[in-house]
Amino acid sequence: MIEHLVFNCQSSRVGAGDASRFALGARTEELRGGRSARLLPSNLKLARFPLARCYPRSFTFYVAIPIRSILLSDSSSDVESAIESFIRYLAVERGLSDNYQLSTQRSLTDFANWCAHARKIDNVRAVTLPMLSDYLAAKKKAGLSAASIKLIVVAVKIFFRFLAGKGAIERDPTEAVPLPRIERYLPETLNEMQVEKLLNSVDTKAPRGLRDRAMLELLYASGLRISELANARLENFYPEERTIRVIGKGNKTRIVPVGRKACEALAVYLSTERPRLVKRRTGNEIFLSERGTKLTTARIWQIVKEKARHAGLEKNIYPHLLRHSFATHLLSNGADLRIIQEMLGHADISTTQVYTHVDQQRLKSVHRQFHPRA
Image (cartoon, rainbow, N blue to C red; front, side, top):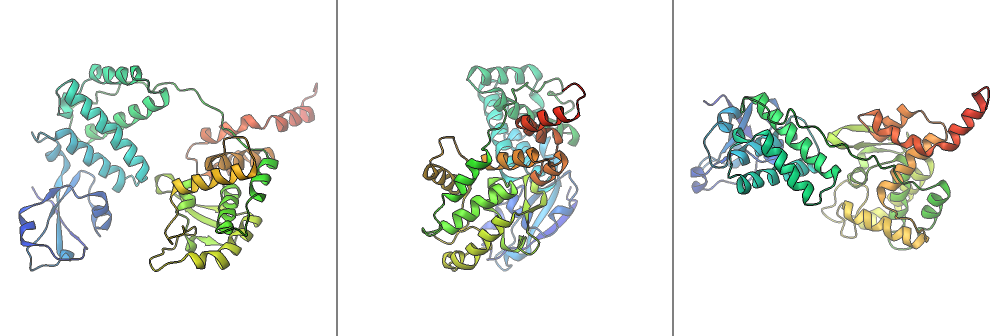
């Protein structure tokens, strides 16, 4: 039964032949483009019905159909349909990042393929706990680490929890599946002298040297993730207030302070070098490539590696290492752990607490100062 009718704004015309074809479930991009998509109840799935040639696509209809009726169908692609609905839920309702969606979809698709080939199952209601245990055992035997297996377990658990909540399955088969215990590795860091050596080694007179110096300064001054740096935009940088607004994991927005030296490096880059990189279709991203496009995370990684080699640093330097160093240096200089948590954008304080291990000197100093028998 059709319960909702939604208009989506598109351009170009639709051919008459398209009227005979429709795709159950619009893609994430189409959902985001739809003006009313976010207002739909969570138990609905969109079906796209293009109109005839005489109408522009700006009047394309999106018809909402209850998800449960689709998931309970006897289609041969039952598992695939369920995964698509779940990924759409993560994108539209939960607002989780594209990387998280891709990682989750990859894990679920691999599990679905294993079920189809190893157990000849293509229905989500046929999945059992022993079957899932066999799958995880096969992954462990194949050499996957505990951390990788944990990502798979989390993806599968929230997927079946979603299906159970929608009434697509009677009982969640993953309820009794425990999360693997993984060893917590302490983050690597640079000391303050190494950071200074890295930053000062950038030749600002070389082509794109001002950009590279500003990037490294911002990574260390604000503790940004590499994706946050790549997506940083001009309108979100406030030089007068010395802050920048970034969108982190789960599309959560936070405002982070920017250090004085980083602001100075950004000001020089934005006023002199960036205008020369701008092309006709350049967007509002702060850091641009030679072609005037947004720098990719892979390219930023390469740049950091290149500058580290040029600086003569023997450690394995990568962008996230500067984020670890940012948090560690704040903590060692007396910053409150909760404040560091806010600046890093951690949802849980336990994630931030991992940085306390590097603050041994400060702990010894406090012990000597306050313990009566120190």
